[in-house]
Length: 371
Image 1: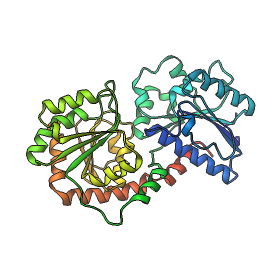
Image 2: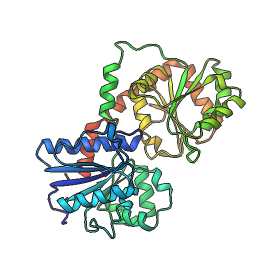
Image 3: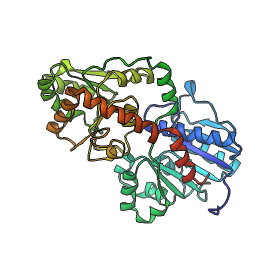
Image 4: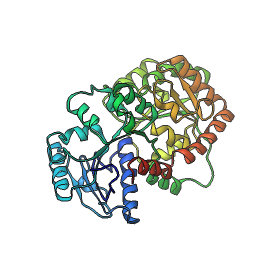
């Protein structure tokens, strides 16, 4: 399809819209933006195929178009995608994950001549990009990235992609914002001497900073005896971390809260005094922006894209990844100085509303897809 042709219909191959995690949040915002284009009669239709969506709690279908659920079956996802494309011959196919583009078998399928865009999130780039995965990336008409950091990684590995890369910093899900605003108390309650971390807790993904926080906590408690660490998230590594907390003598100060609702997450953001996720693996770090929206100063690391969200010394602190001493110093400095935490938190709240809001994301997205 010529680059200057008008896009009238889009086929979306998505992981899911009613799932947890940052990828689903991005996909909800993409689906919202495309529905708004349909409402404005700037787009004729949008069809969707969702890989992991639960049929009993699925998102509503597009404003104009068909939605199919693959019920977790990758072969069904691919066949539904092909069938939809053969019926409509969409002008653009959009994938929210590189692995889904690869699964579609673009080289041998009815989609082999389709113009398609892929959203690259960072973590998927840590696997070997070769074979069908590399081919899917190289053949994309447009590659959207969640940060300049992710775009830089791709430019270094695949220089020929540079003209097709479009960094689009993520935004806070407007559905979450509406919920949090609805349940926000009329006056702010005093914050507790607690640091909060939110993220997956899987043994094959030990890069989010949980270990450094636990190793830092004896020193944090020495400087702030009542300090607590609140851990939100689930995964097969919870048992190991719980054992580690007890061995370090801080078991009573560490709370594993598991998976929580969006409403409860908002309450935790409002109750904690610090958000700390000194990670090495964030392609963007949407939870930093969410914490900032609630006025929390953030601690991230200098190893990943946290610095694109957190402004060091202005909305939070950036520290070396895995450095327990630096982690303890950063957490204790914010817990022990409420005025500093309040100042950084207020600056973060302004930045979250100005930079990481849906209208800015929508504008960047439509510009990148030439819609």
